Structure formats: structure tokens, C-alpha cells
Length: 368
Image 1 (spheres, rainbow, N blue to C red):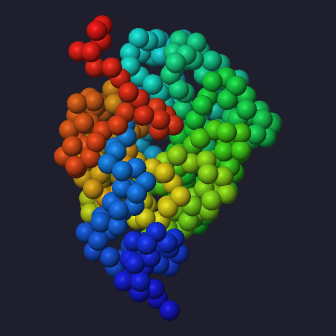
Image 2: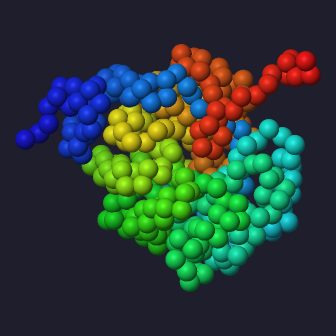
Image 3: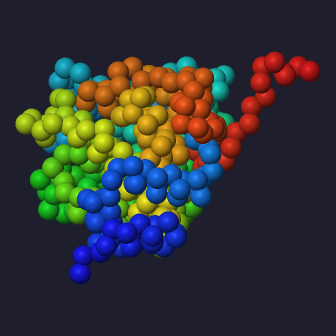
């Protein structure tokens, strides 16, 4: 029997976990205003009036990649116009440019370069930490990690421990895309499978590394496939408790094969996806509206649909989404973030990578 919308709504309001079938009823039948209301109730229970952000920057070592994902606008072949592959010295220079700043996190992701191995990435982390010892290194998608560790001929546990010992303290959520195996075979056939992504994050949680999770939506997937993706994440979180945040990533069509003949989903679908993510992932502490991908205006709207984090200041250091047609030269000031939060009736809270609040002494109070 098909679940009744009113019954499902009552379960959500009561804090009772819903099933995949109930989630599909809610996703397809609930008015958007209702989803927003339910998601905000849950957000308030979990994080009150806080909107989290951090002061961060990205290092993207290369966009040369062995994989040919149909949705990717970032990937280039070696020698192709627009390709780059930074040396370790160039990466040191990128880190050195942030020395003495207020940043608390460096986010390192890039293409899966065929010539780079585990020792190369360990050395990269060590060099960044030597220059910025106080900054948390959040690095490498599960796909990058699986490739470098398997290339070294060791298990995930050992490979992750070596990276952790070098200074990697957290793992971002990229590479998840959509877990459905048949769909994955259509959009990213060469990339590591869903089992690999989940196994890598399980191993990371097992050695005390916190991670994030993502879902790429708005292309050729179905609502049922989105719910299946969320369900697999919820089950792993039940098992390990190692995820900090979930980030729904909107497919952007510019500059990639999958975008030919496709239109991007409207903002209403973005809000529906954010709200349903907050509702279904009842064991995830945080839902992030990644402003670089949405744009500032839509990210602000997301704060009224259950999101409690918008990522960070970025300072024009990532190209992954701008190459796909999203925010160009992405940069946010703390004042802008505070204004976005206030417009949603919420309070901007600076955090570290692990959602500990950072309290800074205002300039006017220093030296008293």
C-alpha cells in the first residue's frame, strides 16, 4: 500500500525515521512549502539558529585525470589547452600565500593523475602542513584515495593511516555521484564503483577520520535513485557515525558531454532536494548548501530549506564548478556570510573543519 502523505508528515514532525517508500511519497507529493517547514524544524532541533561557515581555501593540484566522467567539465588531457599539473614547489607557494591569514582549512582535491602515487600525495600534505601547521588539511575524494592506495598495493586502512600520519585530518565527500550501479555505468563507467566509495569512507571512519558525503543530482537520475543514494549513506552513518555533513551537488551542464540536450533543474528542485536530504538523513549532523555551486542568492534561500552550513570564504581558489558554468571567481567575505544568515533569520557561526565554534576577538577589543 502506498504511504499516506499526512501519515508520513506526522512521522517526520514526531522525529520518527521514514522509509524509502515514505520518502518517495513525501518527495513527489508534498508541497514545497511543507518540505521547507519540515526541514527547518529538523534543522532547528539539530543546530538551533546557527549557520556554519569556515575560512578556507582550495588547492587543486591537477585537472589531468584518467577517468572520463560524462558530467565533468574540469578534466583535461595532458598537453590539452586548460590543463595544469602543479609541482610540489608550486603547491608550497599556494600554501605560503596563505601564511599569516585567518584560514583554518585547506581543501585539496583534483583529477586522478596517472603518474602520481601515494608517496607523492603524502609529501604534498607534509609540505603544506610544514608551511601552515595550524591549518586543517581536508583532502582527496574517495576516488582519488582508492586509486593512490590501490596503486601502492596496500589496503585502505594502511593507506589512510599513512596519509593521516602525514597530516590529513579529514576527507571531503566528492566522487559519490549517484550510487545506483546501472546509472553509474552510464555517467562515469571507468570511475570507482559505489562499493569502493562506501568502503573507503567506512575505513576512514574506522581510524578516526571524519568525512563528508555528496550526491550529484539534476541530470538523468530518478527520485528513487536519489533516495537509494541517501539510504545507503544513512545506513553507513548508522554503522560508523563518521559523517559530519551531507552536500547535495547540483549538476551543471556547461562544458561536459552529459549536459548536451539537458536543462539544469530549477531552483525549486534544488530546494526540494535540500529539504528531503535534511528530512531523510536524520543521523547526519549537518546539511551543506555549497554556495559556490548554487550561487549566493540560491544558497541564502537554502537556509530556509534545512541547510545549516554554506561552506566557506573560498577566496577564488576553486575552478571545479566555475568551469561547469557556476559561480565565477568564487569569493565570500565574512560580512556577506553574516548578511546571508541574518536575511534568513539565523546567526552566522564560524567553525573549524569539525564544527567546533571559533570565537575571534574583534579588532576593537584587541590590545585592551
